[in-house]
Image (tube, one colour):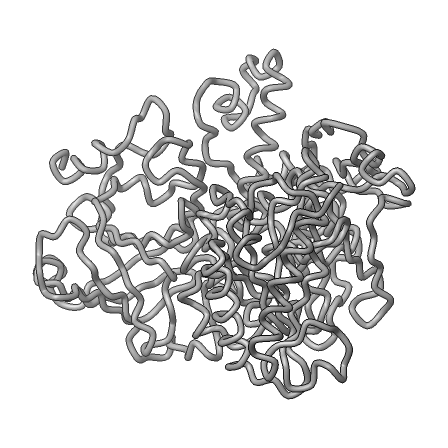
Length: 563
């Protein structure tokens, strides 16, 4: 048995990680588990008990109930039997670091000889789980045994449990753990709360009556998996994180609903979610709690684009059909840890805002914020922008194919001037092309450069592009907005939802994806999770890309604007 688990043990330091190390085989029945695993990329670990271990496959997109959807399943090392109940955090620096929940669990029955099928690369079986049932097949691709990471396919059989993917996605419809009834984001928050509470109450935790979770958290070890009772207790009495600078006050927060269908209620970092069932978008039925849960799920992706950057907020207190509020200053907002920046940023106005923590992000969603718009400069150096944004907005009659070609042309021109660029959907009608730059030039110089690039596009291909706004100018052409590069101007943040019917999302993309994108709101808060699970963060190189604009200024004929 030890030899079967040699690779498993060789990849882990059990002085650091709390992952299981053993377990006894089931008697009479065979178990299976599917774990949702937020490692470097979110994926699903599919495990079948056989010969005293869990045979394991990493499924990037997760299982599908559609027989036509053949899911890639990468064969990985065997895991010990007890891993089937593991739900918790794999610490940073360890193999597979990230959050793990038990997404589904139950028993399985082989169809035919399981060992022979496994060796041959075609294993047929039936599942009896809480989410997955009926017949399934695992098929090894290429028929080559012994590869270090063999590619297999996980395929649903045609039976009563099958459903077309156009009608139903089990991973989207049922994202929660079957043990704690929580999403990955929620378990991460709950464990953080437990750890904070434990640190603050070490003396009390030494008593014999302390809970196993608190006991674990007090030691210099990873926090153990939380039970439903532990999670509820953690939510009921969370420790509050003190704001680094001046913050807006937060009201007292009793327990609230975690989702529109959850009558039990919960708090998130002590933040009360009021009116969770209120419909935000009548066209889709999206509710306030749907928006809150979306920002819970993408918090690790959006926060790097919000931290240390002045932000404006778009709120929808009465839903999308009501009056939308564009807010640059705190005013009467009661959002925890919402930072107010140095008044010298804008001396004639109230202090600007910054959303730089998980609590502020979720607090903003509670305050009915739908959109986050950020400056092109950071709060550390507000006088020197560190990016140039080109907002491609289609006029009446512009086909989407023309938008795709327009984005490619913009990318090509920027490359000719020496600037690499990144693509994202706007979440609305268009596309954003973003060039990160070294924060050395002032606003006027960078805006002049952006304007000249756009004017060059309009002069060179006038039948496609226009540099001036106005409905008449834009008919049949793409308006490229360079005004977003002026001091105080903002652009929808990466991963921000948009306050439009459907709640599209501004999603960072790889340029290779452009041909498959069908609209500026190709992804919404309801379907973006599959995109995240498939590709993760497409802008992984963005933060380390800093370019001088000197070459571009020379190439396009722009002089530095005198101070």
